[in-house]
Amino acid sequence: MEKTYLMIKPDGVQRGLIGEITARFEKKGFRLVGAKLMQVSRETAEQHYGEHKERPFFGELVDFITSGPVFAMVWEGENVIATARQMMGSTNPKDAAPATIRGDYAVNVGKNVIHGSDSPESAVREIGIFFKEEELTDYNKSGSEWVY
Ligand code: IDP
Image (cartoon, protein in one colour):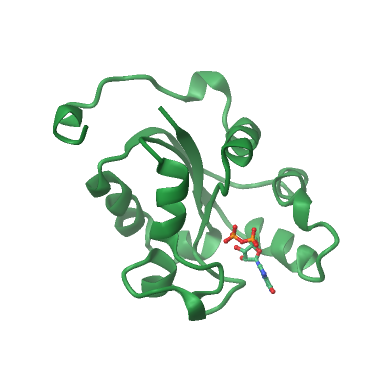
């Protein structure tokens, strides 16, 4: 089953949105396999956002993601990578449709509340950056027979 890395950014944590956001993925039918509230180091932030190193907003992005705790999660399910991206909405909240997370909870591109892996390769890479193997669980979620 596919896994993705989702992270509620410092703005989402400070605004008390952990419950609201995780509830959406739970209600959708996805399975939470790992989660932790953590402070991201500059080194980890630079590694995670490495593909944006040359972009003008890179420094701002690293400052922001290290400015307070994030809620790091791994979710599992059929097509979870693409579906989670749809549930998050467009990167810039001004383009994000209503009923998406960014559409409902964010206004500014720099403070867009959530990160989600954009491909299977990114998911593997990002899960490896934020979680040790032993921090991920493997369990049968009761009710999954009513999802699949
Ligand atoms: P994504 O988070 O939707 O995958 P990316 O293009 O990978 O979007 O960009 C990573 C993050 O960088 C975005 O979520 C956003 O917070 C930030 N970002 C993207 N473009 C800008 C910008 O033009 N100014 C400031 N921050 C930006």
